[in-house]
Length: 300
Picture 1 (cartoon, rainbow, N blue to C red):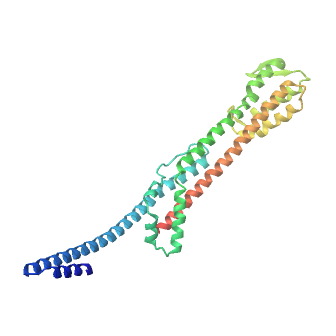
Picture 2 (cartoon, helix red, strand yellow):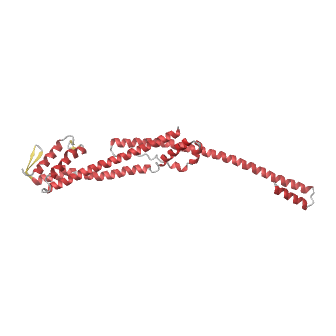
Picture 3 (tube, one colour):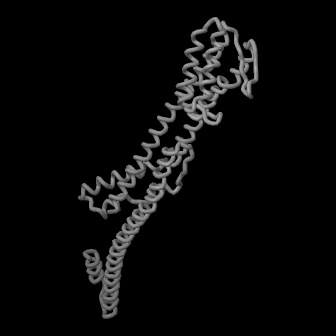
């Protein structure tokens, strides 16, 4: 405004004004003032619109955040149930819920969530921070769970193949030794029986142990293995002790002892692996339950 006044003064001093000049000057001043007032009004209107837009955007983001939290609760609960079922049945069949994803977090403004709940509300801010920490932990959850189960099954199958060597002890290698070391053989009422030299104590004790295992209902049922644990306890471990008595003079005892130890080691590795696997899955359940608890608390 000061500059405008100076310009007018200089103009008046340097010319001889007439009525037309005064009219032009008045119109010029009016135009400038009008433009200023219009600009001021537009600016004020834009400030109001921007504020309304910010409030609307903040509301929309909070609504979107709330909607996504409600959407993720159900698949989390289903995944918890699936893991618990896996642990109970121990059938190694896991159901996965791909809906457990938190990609929506990249579109959420944490500042707006803080603003809605109040920057000075320390308790609520801390609650939000804990919620976000738990949500971010779900970013790689799906792949992590799949990887855990896949890795466990691969390792378990590796050890299980070694455990299956018990079949050599009960069937294949046992029958080979019977045919090799017997002194006589009879088939009595469909039951094959071998007789060994009186000095062949190893085969005598081995044969008795095999016969006892087949007649033990804790180990076998309908000529099929019933309990791996009982097989180890009542057959394989005693066979290690029997064969050890005839080492090193009996080569076949050395062989049977070696296979028996492999079977026991594989069984124990399977148990250790399974125990560790189940503990990991229980930690997943605990983590998922914690996430849902934090979500429910936030939505209250």
